[in-house]
Image 1: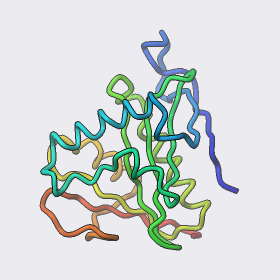
Image 2: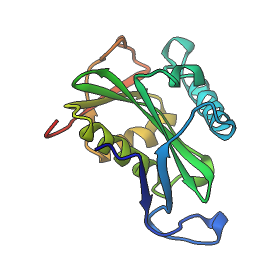
Image 3: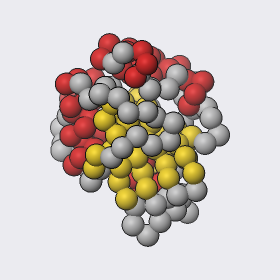
Length: 178
């Protein structure tokens, strides 16, 4: 059974007048064409493009995220969008984390970790044996690399259609029982 929605902890957003170490909200499959999702994805693309040269900006546009090989997730609190992530099937045993982004107002509150844990869980449930990702090697991507490393991802070589680049960091996580 594939999980499509999870709720987490107690509210943790100052905006909501609450605080906690665990985010409160729901992760569910979403449509990357939704207006609020498009706006967050535009901020994600703008950040990626500001940090990486064009040939090494691998963030997907909205049209790329509606691919049947991709499952797109959002993290919402009381309907408000705070983060997104996608799971892309590369082959029967290998998947990729794509387009992971947390709204600036929600950073440092466990939102990214909750999304990443969810994507890892879905990948395991779907029987993938390995989950990989590409992120930037520049300083602006250090928080993302730290998050992935804390979840057990380790450096690896290029995979899928990627090529070696000093601007890219490739990481992978073996999934037990997949």
